[in-house]
Amino acid sequence: MKISRLTLAVAAVLGASIASTAYAIDLYVDTKTKQIYAEPGPGRQLMGSFEQVTPNKNGYSKHDATHTNGTDNAELQEIKHDLELKENEIKALEEHVVANREEKAKNDEKWFNKISVRGYTQLRYNQPLSGDRIASDPELRSPGDSGIKNNSSFTFRRVRLVFSGDINDYVSLYLQPDFASSVSSSIDNQNFAQLRDAYADLAFDKKHEYRIRAGQSKVPFGWENQQSSQNRLALDRNDALNSAVPSERDLGLFAYWSPEHVQKLWKDLSKKGLKTSGDYGILGLGIYNGQGINRNETNDDLYVVAHSTYPIGLNFLGYPFTGQVLEVGADYINGKFDVPTGDMTLFGSNKVLKGTDIAKTLPSGGITEERYAIHAVLFPQPFGLQVEWNWGKGATLNPNKLGSIERQNLRGGYVQAMYKFNNVFRDDGVLIPYVKWQTYRGAYKAANNSPRVAVDELEVGVEYQIMKALEVTLAYSTMDRTNVANLGQASGDMARMQVQWNY
Image 1 (cartoon, rainbow, N blue to C red):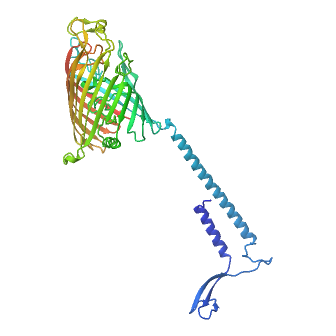
Image 2 (cartoon, helix red, strand yellow; image 1 turned 90 degrees about the vertical axis):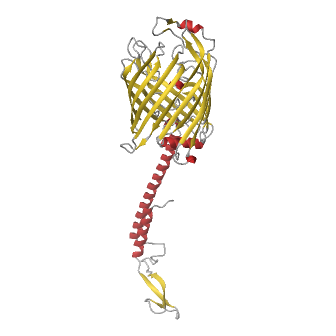
């Protein structure tokens, strides 16, 4: 039985009350004569305090532990009763605490209590300053932003919700819909819900160093492709590497290896407010359909992808590289792509390519696409640099004569420089000016007939993270792009803005 402080206090009071009812006397003994005295004196040693014993009326001693007077007995019984009540209350409270702890432990084991919800929304505004945007022009368009077109102003670029969490120590889930998808029709409907990610991570150890990702997720090809649009600095991904996996995602199985020390380094970079690409392992291997996000597979061939990246601390170089981290890597994909075909009227002529004729040129099972990519990223502390390049071959439209799909070369990449200013107007305010140049010559397979495009673009901008929940990006872009709908080459200058709120 546990005795509380209240119990001990009551017992102390009880003992004092009993002692106060008895008469006590101090006795001393002479150390030489051994005589006993009631007062102190020379050579006398205190023997102790002695209580006078008097007989009760019934002849028994008051302190022989067999009888007490009525008043003391009632007081003791009342105190004893109070102590028992307090002990019962304490016991009940302890049982209640234990029950709550056990119930909480049971609830914590339920997977739906481990799921977190977060998300972000991006509101875009594009204002053409010059260039092709009238009926007689090919019209400047960009596959990275459907809001870049004639008669367009505010658009939702993304409206995302992310549901994620650990079901247990070995199984995690991730589900992300987007509510800013468009549906092609005569009136170009906007803001439909579409599945972006739906996968489970199946780990072989509690540290999640080895895991398999099953479902629809990002294909680990390129560095910027893996980086969330919530974190990416430039408004859109580069065309050269994004053309390999439009929308960055597909359905398949991917195996990742992420050593614990690398996981820690990536987390430390994120805590500093630096924009990483996420944890896709320092090595990754995968197989996936290859026809694109939310599309049915149309051949018996699977794409394969190999991914590698490694962050290197540059402290060994000394100043000015103290604290700097450089991440380098290389990727590879290979698979057969079954090109979707359709009618196409070429810009500047009355020539019409028939989708049925183009489809006849496709070999059974699709055309082989093969790409190699390299990347190097110096995280901005405060200066940063980001470089990617890819090359290879893929299914490409040849518009000559009736039009045919052929396997042609492709190449392209980008260079991005940035500088990070901390504590801008607020303790959590961050300002990052940047400049990004990109170029690409090759197929854009997300469009009908996989047309060959030529892209050259320069973007200069600044991102201001006002707080963690709110950021604004302002940018100027000068573009020269192939319009994938009619193969017309369009150019122009754009003023662009994005407001993003995170939740």
